[in-house]
Image (cartoon, rainbow, N blue to C red; front, side, top):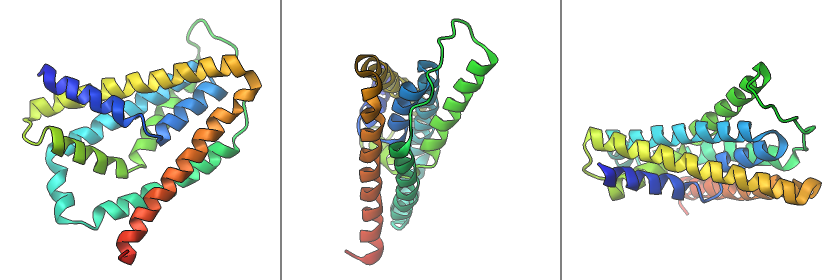
Length: 211
């Protein structure tokens, strides 16, 4: 069981490394709001990653293989969503700094819940992510039982959250080091997200236009 958990942990952490919507949202939350909100975004993204991994284990792979037109459609949907989110991120402006709150307050709870919803929604609205998880699951745990699949999904959750938490911490440190000049951080990752969205759209176009 430990092997499956470690496989999931590694997959969850490594799939978070390439630029993606949750990475952008975590960076944006850590820069413009608070660490609490950034961690909540990461938690939502990690849960969604684990759910997609569980779908891969549950047997979505045969469906995708028997319907080759599905992945390009997912790429197109994801490309449009991520392109819009990337543009909004590039154009965003810093918020008024939020004062540190030593104890949970209604405002803090709303902030955390808002961040959580953003994190989980960004993965759900990025259906191309399920293709990634199906490939990973099919490559590393093709014959996993239901229990082993759940253990793997748990590992994905922990690995994803650890990565997103690290991104939030590094962003906070960058914000402290550069001050107002750190505005380039969310804008740079927003531009990277736009590039990634255009890449997904190009993959969809190549399929439908027969390139």
